[in-house]
Image (cartoon, rainbow, N blue to C red):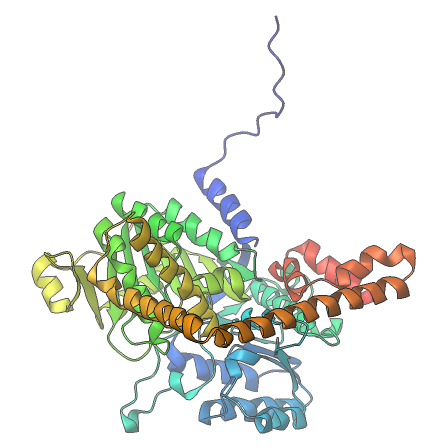
Length: 524
């Protein structure tokens, strides 16, 4: 009997690098864009002057999107720069997040920008029809000028990032990159998609660049613009993939580390396999609860061989990673569920050895200003200064070859409580604070429910009624649209009634098909 013909004809031999590129493209949902020039920028000392210089040189458009813009000395400096360019005829558009900027900038601040000719939009303020919609935030930090130069990173705009040497206040430690070339056009399209998602008229087509390749190369660096809306998990898949592919080193810096069990296990598996896994995290935090939850997860990582360091200075706010001296990530995404699942985030994944070497040098310099956390003989987590580490181990060579943040912490607290109940793993002293806080909270709720049931029943009734009214209001709006639209346009009506997530999702990764769709929508 003759052998059956293969269903899929052979495609030839595929190199491991090609497989890795395919895996990254599918995990991140973003193509690899060649022909760019990327500059690493450390702290506000390097970033703010570069941003302001680009704004000053703008000829056509300035598009700025930030989770926080403060009404302080730094924020007003940028406000004046935006107003100056708007009065010169440059189209200036600004997106800020309602929750991030809450209490940070007054209405007078935003009115001054609008009066100066700046178009300002606020992302996702509370709405009656969306009781818990405010939990999803626009956490992106991006500036794009003329579609030719873009800046992406972890920095918002505020005096915390600058510090005050006269008063002995250190600046926050943060990292961003400057991108020139075709990928800058991708950043522009990401802003345009978010501008449309916030509501109101879209960015006019004449203010947007053409296909990325039409801009021409500005360098030789390849990178991906990873723009993730909620509930897509692109960065989550990407982090898992990088942990799985790493053969020599994984060096991570994160501001609000509250990882899932599966991601922690991925790092632990890599460390046990001989990969040099290091994590640089803040010692002090503007969200103390997150710091406590982070420390509660140290012990299993340390037991597997992961090295953990805590920054000795002011707040460490950077979100970066460098893997195997080849792949580097810089952007707005923290390693927690709020960033992976709940927020709109924006990162760049750079595939370039020269850039990765810069990242590694910066990382080693940061470690020289940090304290390593180790397990003592009693399996307790304790800090060890760098001088002691050098005495014990000697220097290692460079290995080659907010409310949403608190919500993500609930997952870690749940894991700890679950471990107590099921006894599935041994708990250590570092988790005592989280266990005590959770226990005290549950006990307090139980006492309230027992002594004063109305204190729990009334808020639950209000929330339930609010959600019910929101559902009824949404259903009524959809019914009205279906009645007003012709039968042939029913599918279009349903699509328009979708969430902001759909509007900001598929188009943000800026492949050629997405740009064609955006063109068609604008023409309609």
